Structures are given as structure tokens and as C-alpha cells.
Image 1 (tube, rainbow, N blue to C red):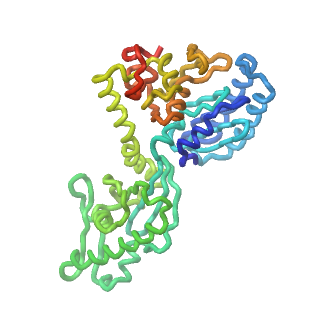
Image 2: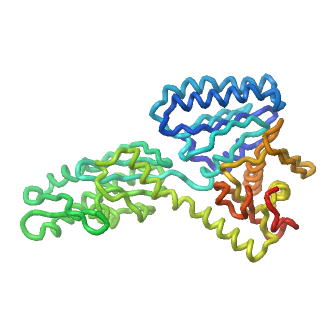
Image 3: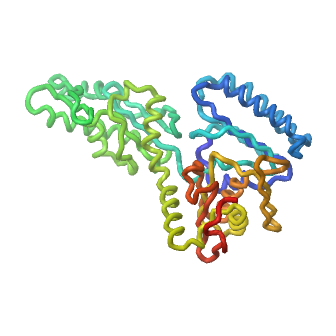
Amino acid sequence: MLVHLTRAKLLRLAAPAAEPCLSIYLPVGEEGGRLAATRLRQLLRHLQDHLPAQGLGSATSARLVDAVWALADDLEHQANDHAPLVYLARPDHVVVERLPDPVPELAVLGTRLHLKPLLPLVTRSPTYALLALSKGEIRLFHGVGASLTPLALPGAPAGLDAFLQNTEFAPQRQLHPGIPGQGGARGAIFHGQGDAADHLKPQLQHYCRQIDRALHEVLPDPGEPLVLCGVDYLLAIYRAISRHPTILDATIVGSPERLAPAELGTRAWAIVRPSTEQAQRAAVARYATVAASAPAHVCTALRQLLPAAAAGQVETAFVAIDREQWGHYDEATGHVLLHETQQALDEDLLNSVALETLRHGGSAYVLPAEALPGGGLCAATLRAARPVAGTASARHR
């Protein structure tokens, strides 16, 4: 899965090419590979039918499209992989990967790759670890978005039941979930002679230390967020003794044994995702502050914004993920031509704004059009020393 995408790698993919480049984004979802393969074939037929009209009727363009037909055949046999698919083909490089987040269905054939849907992989990391603790077993997963991959955890106990059977208190003590308390969470009930809870706590602490030592040896990136799943009393003990630096506050409360991996992934990603979007929220808040205090230093007019981005004047750009603005930009003259529909050799100029901003060291974020600051299809804060005159109140056209 295409997850460790850096700015540098993205910009290498974004470099203009001497020959046509093909970008295909394909949702898969619960319908699975068979229906996705059908939609991919429809996209390919549409591309083939429109190659001459788009001025891309060369043998190279035809070969690029022809090469994807085999991918459609492969998709039919991938019934259990529901992650979206991206296919990127340059003259010197081909990328076929799964993505952690939904993408719009889109096929673009032009002079450079369409990379706007991949921007979230650069601006936020969608990866994390999920540790599920239950009486019967311990499960560790590596998460990418809502998709989970099981990881082995050598050195960890087999489970709480097995661990307690080997302690000196096992013959006298039993541990099981209690009755629901406030918020539906269950407490722990201890049975045995004396104050069993106090006696058993050291055993649980030792159990959690063994898990944490094993986890420390296994996780590829200790800086990734860690989501915990289990009953409250056990998670509280684990959190207190763990050395992991980025355990998230929110947890999945309840017995992990009752949750399928798909449900665990959905619930874990719902916890992780807000933390990955913190920088984006801060950038949107900064835009609002600058727009109110120094309106000459924001821009929402695409005809001015794209040349400003190409000149390195954009600090932070925001572009619509669910809309395209087709057109052509002449870097030599700074002229921007906008079209209502895609025409010969057009590209999505919102894609261009984002890539030019990144190329000059700025930041770029994609949002749904309705959530964009400024009310258009693009917006930006400008570097303070170089405002773009006359754009503070302009719209995207």
C-alpha cells in the first residue's frame, strides 16, 4: 500500500514528462474487485474513444492505456481487498498501489501525473499500531487507514487466562468482567481469599510489562500512534506502565475477541484520523486569521494563484479534492486558460497549484469543495514579503 510517500517522492512523480502520463484512481469498496474491474474497463474504453480528440492519439498514449487492461483482469480475482486503487504510469516509471482512504473515480491522460488525491499521504501519516488485549489472546496490528495487517508479537504472553494460570495466586483467584458501569464499560470482579484485587494487581502489571517489552521490539516505527483495545481495568494498567511514547487517549473499550478485524480497523481509524489532521486544521485557522487581518496576503483567484505558486509566493494552498478545474497554464507567460470541461492537453489546474506550492517549499492540503476556506475551489495564504496584488477578495475564476 502506498503509505510512506514523502514530499520528495511525490515531486519526482510530478515532474513533467516528454511523453504522455496516465493517472487512474479507482474506488473499490465493499462491492469488491469484480465490479471495480468492470468500472475500470469502462474508464479505459472512454479513454481510448477520446484519445484523438484530446490530442493524445500517439502510439505511446495507446500503449499506456492498453497496458492497464491486464490490471482489470487481476482485479476480478481480488475479491477480499476493498482498498481504493491507484495506477500511475510515466515513461520511466509505473506505480500500482492500494490507498488507505477513499478517492474519486478518475482517469487523466496528460503531460504529467495527476497526484492531487495522494496529497493526504504527504501532509498526514495514515499509519498506526493497534494493540488488542483480551483474556484469551493478545493481537497486534499495523494499521493503514481502516485496513489492518496482523503482526506477530514474539515474547508476549499467550493471553491473560494462560498467564494467570502460571502465577502463585491462580488457584485462589478468578478474574472476569463485571457488570456494566457508567458509559457501558465493565469493571473487574475478583474472587478469592483476602483482598484479591490488591494481590492480583502486581500480576497484571507484570503481564503488561511483558507485552510492552515485546511491543518495543516489534514495532517498525515507535513514533507511530498506538491505539489500545480491551476492557478498561487492563488498559489502565497497561497505559500506566508502557514506555510507548504515543499512546492515544481514546481507546476501543470492550472485548476485542468480539470484534472482527474490519470492525477493529474502522473504529481504530476513527480514533487516529483526527490527530493526523491537526496540521490541516491549524492551517485553515491561520488562513482565517490572515484573511481578517491582512487580506492582501490571501488569494482565492485561480488565475492569480497558479502563477503565484509557480513563482514560490504561496505559503499554504488549499484545493478541492472532489472537483477539477480543467485548463492550461503557460509558465513562460503566466497565462491561465480555464475550461468548463477537459479539452486537448488540459490538466487539472488545482493539481498544478498544489504541486507548484510543494515544489517551492510550501504546504498544500486537499479538502472537499464545501469545506475550503474562501468559498471557491482553491485558496492560499501568501508569503508575507510577496503579496499578490488585487486578489484578496477575488473568487476562483
